[in-house]
Length: 401
Image 1 (cartoon, rainbow, N blue to C red):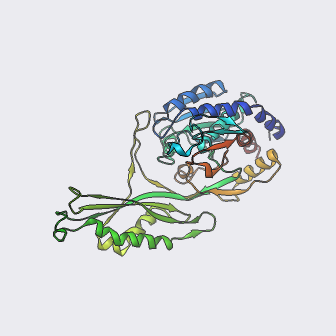
Image 2: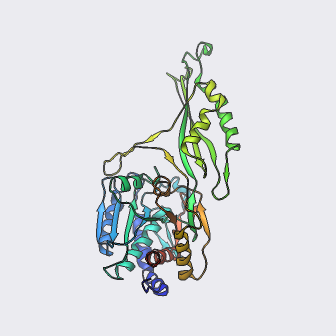
Image 3: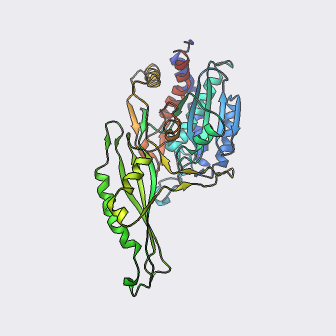
């Protein structure tokens, strides 16, 4: 193995503490909701180029990809650079786009979910670029788009259209200082029933689609209780999240009703089996309802539409996988404590990298999962520094094996 001292890596990461915190502050100041990431991409284009990247590309979907190295194993670090919106500003005790640095933390929307991961990546790029030009590995630092709206679509595009297929992907979403090796999947479904409209003053003349939906709702609630449980990922779940109906007017019987379903998939469940479970419900069959999976087809900031079904499979990297061994070693050597191995509750781009594309994937990222999408979001600068060190040292463990 190349003679790389983990203590030296920690010292260099600490050297970039103020830089990384400042970079995150600047990232937070740039609003970048899904589909509107252009300004943050332009900021990163400059940062990557001044931080030592050998090549920087903005693809036609809007992802920004920086490369360092040109041989050996190919490792990708992923940080999605879009965020959810701020919600009710009255629930924030500070400006969500202030990027305020205070009390050892950086504050604002996207601090934990997940611009801090990008700040750690920028610091790691600077550390690695200072270690020589002839590196024994290739690293892609990816600022991915549209994750909040369609998990993993960015990586479908990167692999299938950009023709970049790394050997390893490290997700930099918040992990509470743990190594995360999987997550439940998810999918969206719609149960659509048809009726016959008539004037509301004589409802017996029609067939009310809303009434036809009622027994289906009860059956869906009952089905949730019987879904399987995985010992690592936990239970699959099913929730009715919205009802929509259509009629010629408010004083007319509905001729269509639609129930929206949020389905969380555990290991052993697939989008196909989850859809089939709903179609098999007696209440769905009696109502002659259709179970449909919607298509995501929104326009990216670069004007590209890349349609995909809203299905996001569960994924798990086995605990005895060699990448988890490397991650354990990396954590132990840098921080002098063994890591906790865990999973995410929420969804990540791993649904594509490993769930769809079977690229070995795990996660280690700054911040706390509970901060995601919450008001008063913030992240500890210590976390950013630790992750910068991890990202800088991990590739050397890979080439040393």
